[in-house]
Length: 143
Image (cartoon, rainbow, N blue to C red; front, side, top):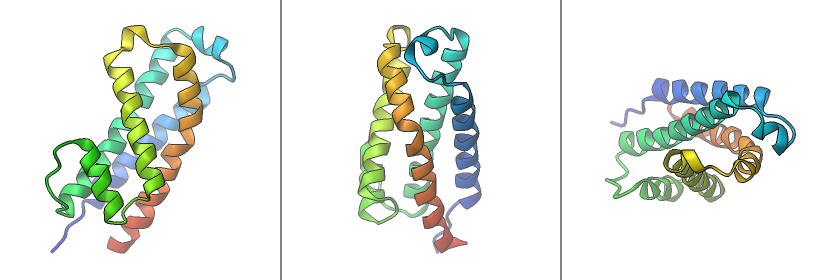
């Protein structure tokens, strides 16, 4: 019998939703204002990083609970979710992009190009909602 940890997944989706709302509320309209934010800018980076980590975690929980195989890396998890019609190829690609951006934030924190990051954050905010929508649609099969 398959037991999907729906409560954990929904709690993670809630964290993402709260983080992204905070980011939206504090993200200025232009890059110069963004560069001038100081600690608020750092908080935006951290909230985005945490949200991406939660997306990756949700993918891992689903992969584990559905016993879709032991992945050799996180990309294998995303591919597995696509191949099992849990997320679309489009969302899978967006999750891979998120993962790359998260790695950029984590490993180059002292040398982040604020202009590039600002554009990526602005462009990527909608992707969190699209991911959530697909996951919730899939979860309905188990509720």
